Length: 322
Image (cartoon, rainbow, N blue to C red; front, top):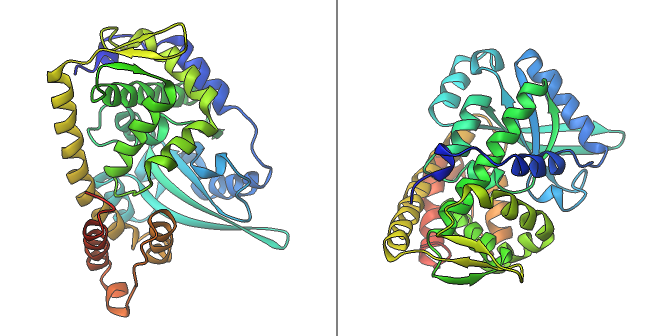
């Protein structure tokens, strides 16, 4: 399936929908975390984006907020050479942050990526690591200037197009509503990252922001191949995929799953150099989303790559991932 949005203009309405969503208010506790990140990165900071489950609940201080920190250049972002090399080799780098709010401790996980790498990940990466996350609703909490704001909104608009094109290509011909389209795409991207959330979880996340997904889909429609999806009067869409397109999409998603297994292990290994208590955090996330408890022995704590293979084996053996 061709990447039609590469040769077509991104619909202006799509960037407007994203800009409106990105500007919505967030709990005041996030300001403390944003201030800490702003102070840490200084002049290198381009933008701070909030994404993930904290959009649906008041995370601080109960949970861990998820941020993406966009920087202008890795050389400006880090005094340490090894962090620069790691970020260029396999972006993003992931770190842990704590900040005090009176008697409460606020916690966040933040990923660092250059604005240029963020744009490439949203538009042209084969693996959905960036475009699957940023096709979904986000909040832009801090931004250097108007130009960076426009670049972030445009990158997220391209992520929406990439997500919809990659998802729709694999759906059987017929009628589908917005919930089915987006939930189907989320399930595929979860499998490509060893994230074992169920289909029910994907549907739940979509229903939480269903009006937003409806607006995004409608706004993206002019940039999508009209032979694949056409809006109907009842709010559903008619999907007209060919056998070739569906076969090609299945191959692509199978390759993404295998690619994702390797990338997940590499990112976990890399996180041991940047993310404090990353194994405990990863084990908690896996148990929370899959019910699979993975013990972290002293030997595995010393050799986190082996722990990553152990996790993969247990999830494969239990049929959580395939």
